Length: 247
Length: 247
DNA sequence: CGGGGTGTTGAAGCCCATCAACGTCCGTGG
DNA sequence: CCACGGACGTTGATGGGCTTCAACACCCCG
Image (cartoon, rainbow over all chains, first blue to last red):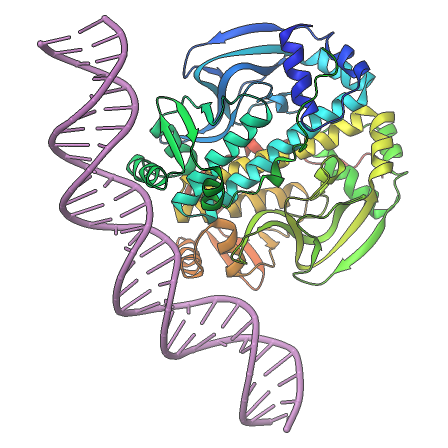
């Protein structure tokens, strides 16, 4: 099996039942691969698309471009995510997608996906579920940036990213790759860079995390969860670990 | 045709192509109707559901319940919206849904919807599209509450609600029903009640809106759009008005 | 060695949360 | 009819947390 198919199937299995037949059908999908430099836009606001992207390596981010030229980052995506699955059914992108750090993405033609959804509705439902989890993450971001103080806000973001990375087996022990700068953190959480730095120092001195050189290390998960008021329910992931029953 | 079916079909037509055959199929859906007092929860955080709700009259809101007992309102929904369509594919509600003002909702069994999606994929795609527009609205709320100052934030919310109400023909001239209090506005926009009041006064003195007694009146749409930096692209609605070609 | 990008830290000031007091409306019950 | 009480809206005073601005440190790469 191609690595790209493996990634997609494993990802869907984090939340959906995918049968062996479904897996075989998914392997019929063709794709093209593209390597991205750090901070490279690969979908722009206003674009239309005939392909959907699948993250293969690294991380990508979605963001709104604001009138003043600044950005509001909306979400971060790692291997297995389809950050622009909405282009399947919405004509124009209302936001942009860029890489953070170097990344690899695969492009899958809309037409092949649509045909698969008609042939095997359960695959469509699995991808639909994926987009619904996306929406749940957006909702949590609303609450995070509106109702939590700066420290909780940052802690919650780190909790979410680490939890998701772990579910996708992208962590090494207590460390995950998060090749993001303070400026981008600020444009995610709605805080000024200076505040980002001071809040980060706070989390560090609480012995909760270490964040340097594009790597996030969780020193005290329980404390981080408590500071961030993190409850992973909204991620709708199965609690059981992945089982490789097709390889 | 039942009024409930009419509402649902018209709503889907705001963004999706629904053929006469699709419309007939949609009319096979059965439902039960429930009337709600003002501020009545009808889905709670953690619930599972076998039915999906369709707003028939009035407005409902989705919200996160916070540890301190306060709420973060996430979105508002009016006639035609399906505020809990995610229950079709996600087991547990990660947020609650309540009425604001009195409202009427219809409940449609999940099983009937799922069968319809398998029989007629295009209907499923239309509902999917609806959930994707929801997600786009959530994204805009992230940006609104994170990157815009208080005045723009409130203006943008009013723009969105009025624009959506107009698309669904729920306005009377420049007036729409918005039976919401200052406290709830604050819990939507992430500001204290006092600030809500003062910001509201600002918009009033700018001759942009009037908001009183649960009614929002737009006095100067262009100015409101400018203050709120509102661009309706993210709502993904067709620009053409609805055409009643099945009645 | 120089320069740019990024991170760090301090000082000043403002916006907004908080608190408090008062006003207004409306429904209830005397 | 009026008195009362509660929910909601309004307004002022205060304080603090965050933004802003500025200066400097650091590091990688040319």
